[in-house]
Image (cartoon, rainbow, N blue to C red):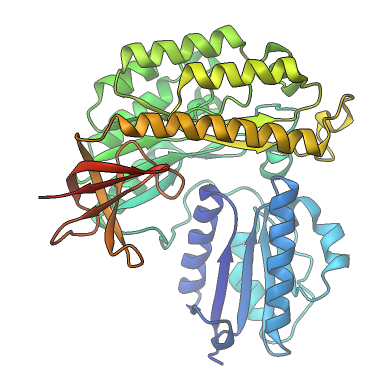
Length: 444
């Protein structure tokens, strides 16, 4: 076993990934190396997600699996959302864990590790700190050509089903100066695509400038970062529909570096369900937004998430949802079934939907969307698509590229053949076929 070497697992979303990358920097700065083999490490770190029950189950299963491999000499540290929200409970249930650090405790990681490797266990219950302000450096785990730029942490939205505000705290924007400096550093390191992330990207600056600014702070940030040499693409994720205004739409349409792609978590379309969820806006507003985006940015690709089985959702409200899906023809659409989370207002709502009904509705809209995606894909056959080469699929014996209308890791890809491709470079691919959600092509 190597001394001062850690094995780290990161679970959850890309915002969690940024936390992990910051921990990697702190570890490196503290003299710790990272191993991809559990048997070679002196400590194991699991950075967890706790957004919904399935995420907590995955986290607990991962912790227990790694606890079984740690033996007597290794230390096990659990970080992130799970200990932030459920520290008291999991400390009792997971005696195998040597320390718990919440989302505000990362800067104490090296100190805790140093103490644990000397068998000092008094740090098991770490005092909670304050949210970081974005100034922590990080070691990226993404490919060289793209990176996530987390522009804020926390959330002020009061969605009745969501635990994020209770875990991450209130909305806190990273200063534009810090973000511009970070973006310049990433560009110097070879990053071509910056992906703006936050719990709510559209409300960037609300805590700095006030609510009457709309998306002006975000658009100003986009404008400044788009002027950085080396940054070719800017992608916006998690844009709440009630905040998207004409200024942001015009920025997306008019700035050549902003990818014509917008991730809008709509959650539902029924006015009744939206009200129960605590969501702002209405069915009419959402339909109008989609129409406006397609009209003003004809080549835009939309991504969204929709929920089935929220309390009070009857067949009537579900039919509204399926009608919307068929009408909107959103290219990238993710679904999840409502998870009844304690300490959220919706937990106490009556008319809870049965699990069997949730499963049935989930499968139904997944089938509808699969047909929509297949038909949209067929429209590309015979056309040439600009994409970024990223990988090789050895089973298929083909290269893998990500079209500009796709975000990394979650959207469709293009499998293609060519004599040579340079990772991270743009490539124009002629589409020759469709493989379900993905495309097949070739480069002459």
